[in-house]
Image (tube, rainbow, N blue to C red):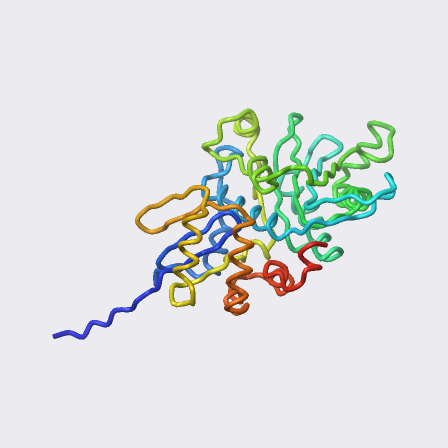
Length: 318
């Protein structure tokens, strides 16, 4: 008689900012490194239009949900209006001030990539997403959403330096006779009730979208190279995981079922859609009784862990 050993995989609860799911981990699941590699390769695949695939749209929405959830309300002094203003995220649009004469890939390599590196190096920006789109004039432009306030003139001057490495500002000045081109727009996202849903709807048009913006993206020329991207910090976030061997798992599971706005079920995954305030409550209560070690593999840094577990009230409210 052969000796067959069976491995038991406990049910795992995965907590995301707007969704809580249960599943049984498979021994055949790809490593996070392989997933990230596959994810990056998808950027370079040929596309029939600028509409995202359902899988890519889902990944971008996940990154947006995490960024919005981890972004604390901030108050900054704006000299031009002489008062402090409240904001949560910055929504930046970067354009070309003259007719595009380089390929999309060349513009991203010479202007967008250095701009993102500048954000990381100069302002320690770790949470951001970007999306490329085509304007009516045929030029490529970029939307970047990040969780820090940077003065518009600082952003504008850096973008001008980057795009003028390809001569776009010099050409604008020759054609218009003006010195400073209108090539940046910065908005503080602060008045939208559900910021994550608003940004996801605006940035992640996919093949199933049926609206004017999706139609415009479908009919515009196809963008060369990557269509969108997220920071490495957001890309590596795994979410918060609890398995049924941990204390109070069943209590938490019943709490989720009772308070979910809606749910979706199939043979492998049960998903419950929730408000972020419920996620806050769940994390705070679970951490109070179990400490923070269960968060160590989430991909969150120490500052974000202290914020979401309410260990540092200044971080949670500043």
